[in-house]
Length: 232
Image (cartoon, rainbow, N blue to C red; front, side):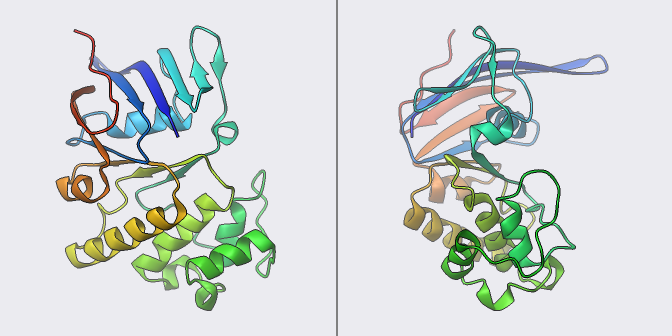
């Protein structure tokens, strides 16, 4: 997967404004954007996912334009086929594990039946060791089971890449270590390209084939990969 991203986005709040200037050109499978709160990490991920529209620039994956301001291209989040894993996993609390995974295959907001069976759902239940809890609700799951359910829902639609928003921030230290190892093993097994944003250097150490340090909306330094320097 070749990520080619060159975007600007200005956000206004009252008299304040924040400018994101994201430049990234990389063929790495595991990219980490590291920075403190307010650096622009989530805004970067939302722009790549198509949840917010940049003011200028382009977003290309393997030469395919997801966004190009000059050409008038702005694909919907669904058309981009990028799986976005939210910090709190955003599982539907009233749907069981099987339904949550199947929701990744549905269009619109109609809930899948509680006993839905299809090859893709069965595959991910088995692959992630979730068959035993397939009928349970998210509140009945462990932290690891919730993360695996969210990942299965993201992967069932065969996305081009995974976008991970601070996936361990809400976990205690012990569970954080366990979940890091689990995600590391899953990504290596599946070989799905990913961009992970975090404020934690330990996440960058484990997952960062390429690490981008973001501060005040701009890349300060890059380690590994093919990141292009910021213009002066």
